[in-house]
Image (cartoon, rainbow, N blue to C red; front, side, top):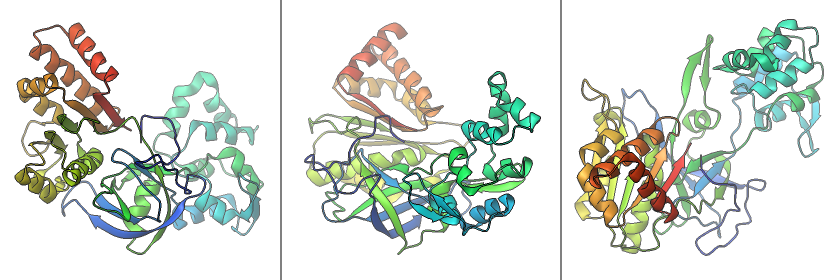
Length: 391
């Protein structure tokens, strides 16, 4: 979820935690609350997880969660392969475990990868249709097949290929931790870490699907559940060192998570810089995440400005980048005062649209061209005044 290379989990003072990706802490789910209202097209949850002594984080960091595949999905795969689950296999570290445990905790049986398709084809030299699909010249065809499919679809469409359970470690990718932006300040929540998760559920190719980690958090992680977690530092997504500097935050949907942390941190430490938050989602009555807290912060003066864009509340869709354009003059005035500009959320569309709108805001405000605006933005990046956490 983060635009930086993997680092050791470090706290405010550079302290390195004993808990890492390879040695996670077995945390307890303290809170698992639905944030969206009944009738929403989305299911977004607020999650709070306990921390061990010495585990520290800074707003802008992420929490990594080691997920498990659904028991029903594991059973489907084993049945399709003709295995019972008690067969013994060696995991990636040569530790002997059962096939059931491997499929549940070690191997990715969800979203089908093109690499898995290729490795599977190597085990089936006689399946010409499968081999034609993994031919480098047919990349688009392979990607089309993988879209919306999982490993169960592959073994159902091309059965009888896997003869030994150990072969699955050559076919399937590792089940890796999912990274979620931290939505809390440890100055306020000393013994826990909080995050905001949209539960992914969809139908494709005649089957019901769900996100591996988000599905687990949505329906298999009630209060009291134990989850392996670790903290992940993100030094490239940080509040200004100058606590009086203004901050502009663009965080639609779950992208608002780190900005809740930013605002809590600035509130807890008495930072004097102005704060402007742009939040967007589908419907105000159903999808306004952390509404009460943000409105209270606005009333208390912590949140200087709060602008929202609810796309489905009017005939013509309105997004955060549209609100930026509406307030272009004020936005540019903040930038001229040295404001730091942050974006969190979807990389494929939202982040690009926001950058386009920002360049337009700069061009209008400075009476310049888009080329001049690009130079202005490049200078902001160099000064670390333009930071993104996109995924």
